[in-house]
Length: 84
Image (cartoon, rainbow, N blue to C red; front, side, top):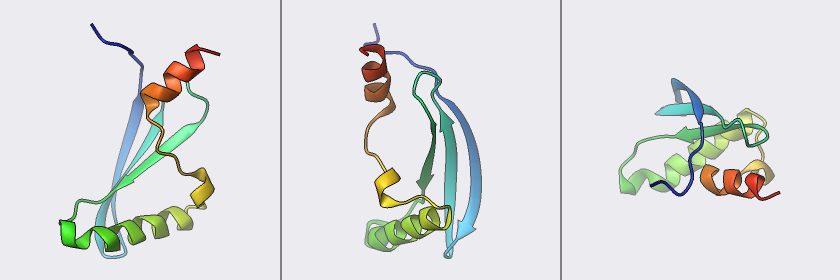
């Protein structure tokens, strides 16, 4: 039996930026206020720091600042919204 269930609606966009293949996923979880973007690139361990810098650059180009970033999981945010 699951501890928590939620609906997560996603739309994926593949693109190249800063010489890297990236995937942007636009996410909406109806019970959590707001829209989210997940941005990723598949790289070898040795390329990790450069890839993270490139991802942050793309986020900056989209107007997303460090203060907008979160490590909170959708399940935790949904659980918190249910306890309000």
